[in-house]
Image (tube, rainbow over all chains, first blue to last red; front, side, top):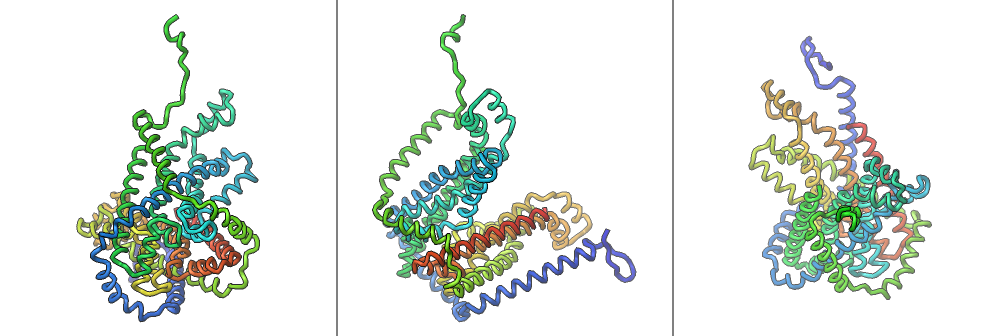
Amino acid sequence: MPTVEKDGTRVWARRDRATRLRIWLGWLVGTVVFVYCWRIIGESTIWSFVWDAPVQALDLASRMVPPRWSYIGRIWRPLWDTINIATLGTLFAVLFATPVAFLAARNTTPSRWLARPLALLIIVSSRSINSLIWALLLVLIIGPSVAAGIVAITLRSVGFVGKLLYEAIEEIDKNQVEAITATGASRLQVLLFGIAPQIMPAFAGIAVYRWDINIRESTVLGLVGAGGIGLELQSSVNVLAWNQVTLIFVTILASVVLSEWVSAKVRHAII
Amino acid sequence: MNAHAATPRVWRKPPFIADPRLRWAICLGALGYLVLSYATVTVNWGRVLEGMGRGAEFVLAFFRPDFVSRWGEIAEGFAESLAMTGSSTVLGVMVSVPIGLGGARNISVLPVYLVCRGIIALSRAFQEVIVAILFVAMFGFGPFAGMLTLAFATIGFLAKLLAEDIEAIDPAQVEAIRATGATWLQLINYGVEPQVAPRLVGLSLYRLDINFRESAVIGIVGAGGIGATLNTAFDRYEFETAAAILLIIIAIVMLAEYTSGYIRRRLI
């Protein structure tokens, strides 16, 4: 039991000397890093703008309310586009991610030295890059359109769905697969009757979960020109029409809450 | 022989959704949606074909990334991004801990609980990029707005998970500390903290990871960091520079993921 000397008697302490020293050292390093980071930020900040922020915030708030409700007529179409981007993006992502996941899972991969690293590389590079960056790139390649948004969401989601799915595949019960194999089933039949039923709930759960995230992400893709409600947001911010921005925020909030509710409901029904 | 032999029954795989009405409704709904969305999403195939050359150029750029010609801007962007990541995570964690404590039903009172949960919900509702737009409008362009954005987003993530963690702790230990006549602060320090600290450290490291990824994005709306450099590179069609930036991002993300994974494995 670690103790400390206090007035000649030994008193209980939570940690011994070495641990206390290590924790103290950790705090020291953390503080130094934080102060250094703060300095870098401080150097490239115009402080007069920062001190001005409360005034700016009040000004912004006064411009934002009341929201311009009449603007709603122009929002429905972009909102529909946003939902399409998220839904179709998720759909394509699931289609691409399924084979990738089977290649990446240790127990189903055809080759451990070629297919698995390749599949893992696809998953990692897709996961590291945010959908907005993918969108930035795709707008350059295939032009500013809803299609660019769909492809951006697809590229970002493949890694996410693939990773969760291959982890689910690796956790399946071997006995069922063995039982199907023992009946003399072909590889495809083993896949369909031994593995697929076991991962179906996880699969549906992952797809709906990603769809929910994609609704959030697709609302901002328009900022770089990839269609949806973000386009309206961008043009409203550019002309400083903050009362329209408020309305767009309300719409985004409503759709996010709705999609979260749907996703929670579906996942609850599955599990 | 009975009637069963006359019509041999064949085993069929049980469907995933047991209720046939729900199954058909979902299938029809999905089909209807696909038709509707196919009709409204217009793809300009001519433009897509035209862009394929540029796409190939970009893919090729990954094999000859150009780190050199814009190195000054790249280094500055990454320094800013990493600084934003570090300071926003520290700031976010510092604010998240009291909010997480207040948001845990078992150790806080109802009014405090509601306020803290309200803050968490607000922070979770909006995407980082949207928050960044507002903060840039308030605090001006640059990494300060970006840092605040990331810190704000950290609260929604960390405080929520911390509060849920605290709600799931073993009440016996808290009871034991309370029985010694401990004050509220001592109760938190000796009864609650040892139970949630390892996971809090793990979550903070995970959030550090996320904050770096996000810091690459919010620069696009003017909140500083590598995102601004990347945006400029794309605007100038300098695919080699953009590829270099993306490769560095992937490398840092992978490095961070491995390091934080290693530390978390050692802690838990």
